[in-house]
Image 1 (cartoon, chains in turn red, brown):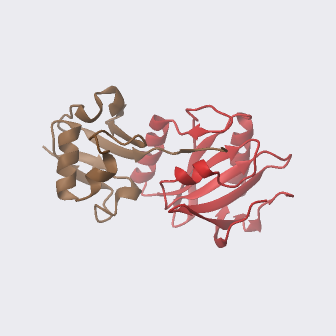
Image 2: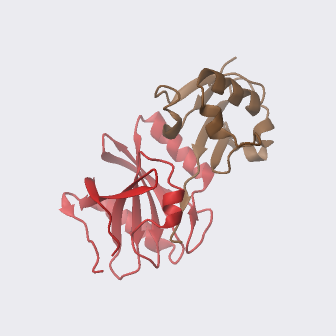
Length: 148
Length: 93
C-alpha cells in the first residue's frame, strides 16, 4: 500500500460511504466519478457524475452534469467537500494523472478501489502537486483500509 | 447591461472571494477582457498564449458549452449567465 503523510480527517455517513462503493461497482470495470457537497466540513449531498471518458483507466467528468451540480451547491451555499472517482484495478492512491489534474485545492479527493473483494476508499488532499492523506471515518469509525 | 459570471473557487482569490461577479462584453473575449480589467490576473487563468480558452477550462453561456457557440468569440447576450468551471479528470494511469 502506497502511503502519504497523514494530516486531518474526513467523516462520511455510512449510507454515503455505501453509495460511493455501489456507484463504483455499478459501472466496473469502467471508472466512475462524482462530487460531494458539504457545509462546514459536514456532508450535505452526493452528486454522481457520468464519466464522459467511460474508460477503465481515466475519468473526465461530464461537463454539463458537473456544471449543474456545482451551481446547485453554490445556490444552496454549500461547498465542494469532495471529488471522488474509482480505480477498478489499482489501489486507492492518487496516480500521477490524478495529481497533475487536481485543480480544486479545497476539495478532498476520494478514491474508491475495487482491486480487492472488499472495496477501499481513501481520502487525500492534493495541493500544488503534494499528496497528504486524511484519516477516513464512517460515522466516527475507522473506514476499511484493505489488507495490502 | 451587466452579465453575471459564476467564479469557481480556484479563481476566487482574484475576486476577493466573490462567487458571482458582474462583467460586460458583447462576446466572451470582450467579457474576459473586462473581467481581467476588474480582477487583474484572471484572464491569464482562462486563456492560453494564443488567446484561446485553456483546454481544461470549461465556460458555459447559460447552459451551453461555449465550444459549441464559437469558443472565445461566442456572442454573449444581455442578461446571460456565464459559468466558469475547471474540468475534473484523472484516473488510474
